[in-house]
Image: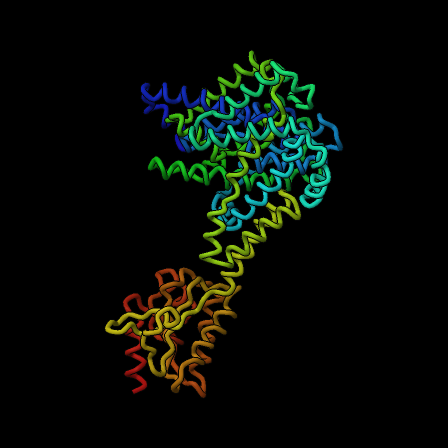
Length: 558
């Protein structure tokens, strides 16, 4: 139960001196969440107060099941954009139907998360590479920014995809409302300055308050500055989304895409905080916590939520010691919903656009892209494919494309592993890759090879061809082949069969060469022995080294 419900552990050791820190962190997080959640709700296409509901209920549920003391749960820019752009084609313009689909998406996401927790699929979800994710986030940031730029310029915007939105915005720039643009740029300047000089502080709330005061005391609305309007007062009634998954075509792919984004972003943020504070998180428990948070938001008029790095940094820098800070944040938001919603009536929508634009700029990691370009052009190309895929196909399909790209990368590398030719390191009895170290000494008449991967049914043909190619590179008449298995963690039955067949082929005329296997791991040795390999390659011991096998073959041929 302690593993299932982490509060049973940390509440038992809770120190009262940590309480003021958690209270301050909770209030600070709530202050940060108010403008951000309203802005992200507009991205998702749901009423502004739904963003507050996400923080209110998602945070409480995560506090019960989460394994990170500082991770903060709420709506994120990428998920909000995925929800908004995808549901737009499902709801048919019906705002109530839109909101119900958003809640249903959170419910389906919760089910997916719990199933992933039950079947221990946290490792599989982590297969999406950081390089592909970097490109995806940059593409998502550009897509999100383009949806907010019309609000910044005070024009209607339009278009169903990135290129069309750029074209429509370009044609509408002549109709820019300069008052709205100036107001938005001022908000952006204050937000950027706050990020730089007051990191981790709820600067966005201060900007929101100043904007509300300005609109309330001046005739800005008459000049075209639009406002949020009246928000419903009070807490939402709890109920299950009225729709079922079978009734909404496409909701399951949408929920799965949100699940991938939510889990990857949440675990990445949690691991970053854990590294800073010297503790460990439980990636599998995070699946259960993600499911609980989205289940709570589904019943509380919300939409999919995740652990985001920006809100978690705010929570951490404000002094959060335990997930109790999330409970205080939820309590603060509940009080705001009960008594303070009227104060948000004059909040300009252009300020919410400014909040989103400043938030998503952090998704474009120019430094990381430069690093990929310098270190690996292939990884950089994959990042660019993901980026362009998001721009061309949209964020939802971009998520799927990023997952497929990573899967193909993993399969491709596993199917075509590197096979090294080894040479003797001068002055030692050790061997390493001749390609990497050309000063190594090749052994006359003996091919020494090493496959740097597992040997399985889908790569046996490639491995066999590569080994034979290394054998063909031996200049003098072939005496034998030494196969170093130290970099091969697993060999399946097909791999063992290929090695046996290769041993017979090498032993047959005209080669008449012996094959020796050395440095095999325990389980690999067991399988190879069980498959009868020793009658083809000799004893497969745990003490023989590459040098021992080379000396044995040299003496034998002599």
